[in-house]
Each structure stands twice: as C-alpha cells, then as structure tokens.
Length: 210
Image (cartoon, rainbow, N blue to C red; front, side, top):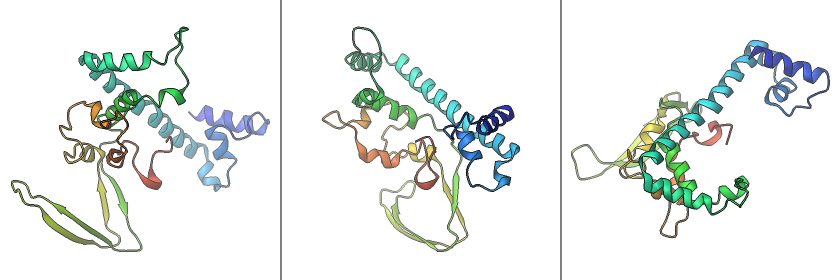
C-alpha cells in the first residue's frame, strides 16, 4: 500500500494524474500535511481496500449460498435477468439491471443478512441533550409501554446493524432469506423498508461508496 501512495504522488508531480484517483485527490487537497503523510495515507488505503472488497465478497457469498439452496428463487432471478440479455449474451448496462425488481430485492436481502460491521457504532451529542420518545413492549408482556428518556450531552449512544436487521417489526422471520419482503403487491420496491436497512450506515457517517 505505501508504494501505491508513493506512485500517486509521483504521478501528480509528473502531471500524469489530475486528481481522479483517491490518493491523488487527497494528496492535492487542502488537508494539513499530517493528514497526508505516508503513514496516514497508507492507513486510509487499507481501510478503503477492506471496505470495498471484504464486504462486497461476503454479501455475494451470502446471496450465492441462499440462491443455490433455494432453486425456486434462483429460477425466478435467472428468468428475470435473462429477459434483458440480448442474443450476444452480454449483460445490459447497470441502468437497466438496477430496474429489475427481483434482482434488486435479492441484493437488498443479501445486504440485510451480510452485515458489514456487526459491532455498535457510537455517536456523541456534544452540544445538546437528546430526547428519546417511543414505545416498547417488555419481554413477556403483550402491552406496549410509552418511553420518554433524556440522554445527557456527552454520553455515547450506539446501535448495531445486526440488531436493526433482525427487528421483527420491520423484517418478520428476519433470519430467513426472503427477497419478496422487499416487493409490494405490484412487484415494485418497498421503499419504506430502506430506512431500516443499515448495511451502509446512515447520515453523514454513511459509507463513502454509496
């Protein structure tokens, strides 16, 4: 990885790169020199490498396993994709593929069950108290309880995508691979489920690759 950083710097110096690569854009940015040191850039490179390869390969592994063990789903997906492949056998552009409802549902379900990071991601509100209002049903009870809590500023709060992705309110039978949960009665994507999908985190700390 250090050699990639050095090459990016050399390409910039020699006019071979105008900032189109990740390393080059960082190296020619207005970040302080300490943030552009070889050590710092190497660390960033390893983070991007891991985030862009291990997560994708694991998601594809999970999807492949479930499709191969569920022939009916594989048959439905194959039929849908085959319908947009021309006589040459070449796949169509991504713009066409992303409009295929069942393919999209399979991808979303694969992402739901292949958590990128299962650990909690913490956030700290430094300038204000947070007010939580909601309801919850105690274990063993059939009655929900109204909850109101004040979380003082400076306290860390966090959650895990694994917890959210197995919330039965959003994903019934959450441990099952069910692509159809992402489709409505018209076989269109159910956008309301997107807010419960945290495969790439949310907000300003969401995955840079999205």
